[in-house]
Image 1 (cartoon, one colour):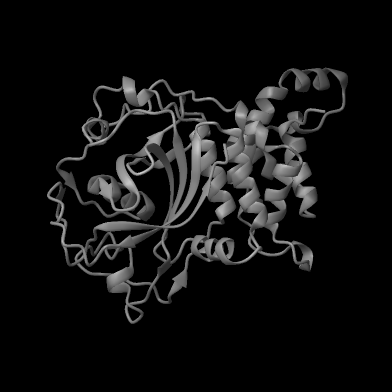
Image 2: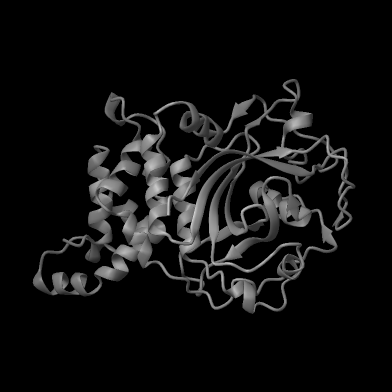
Length: 355
């Protein structure tokens, strides 16, 4: 029997022993009360006809659900919320619902993103600033060439689709990188489950062929001239994250990804009050060294099996390259070697496609 979006969500909530809240369904999936549960025949017929749209809405928005970011154990058991959710997505064959997602935006690259002469502007949206800095840097060691940031996916303003943090080209593996960046100056607390589902959702809503048809995007113009570059249908999902946010005494000056954190005082470095390891780094270590995250690994393998053009899912730490001998970027006005950084990456884990 084919499930609708509400039924799929209820199934997952039941697996983690949690009741569904009506207002939660509305805020996540944009459904109204009359659509949620009505047993009269007319509504049943409407719901059957609208089933495809409904389950598509589930796939497009599920990564935003608060339960996807739960970090504890189910009712005092030894089962992690995120593991039970990952396991249910696979065992109930819900991963296939992502296949219903299709790109809707006519042009992902009709933005004014430019790699030249950019003002260094510090706002409270630190993750977005970091994404811009990586775009301005261009080539990031062990990550690839970054050719766009905040790539839009929505067709209409009312669409719920977000933006891809970073788009890159993996020069080693000859594929595009759909990069989900996670960063917060006090340590990001989002689960890897959310990161993977968000990256996968965005991948499904991205039309890679538009890279060929675009003729007025600076990042893509540079990409086309990269040595060894060739357009491909192949891609990878990359979860890119900080290892930890450090106090000044714990070496934050050398390791923190950003020092200018106060928009009202960008001339001085700011440090967190305590050193915090990011949730992504913590979970990635568990993926590498224990069986605590086996269901997440199986979910990743299931996604890869479903997608013939996805080569791999990579979990990557972003590091401040404070030892770099590279010259400072001349395309960022106000950039300072004392307060700003160049970046490099380190791949902790690659889950390859077996196809």
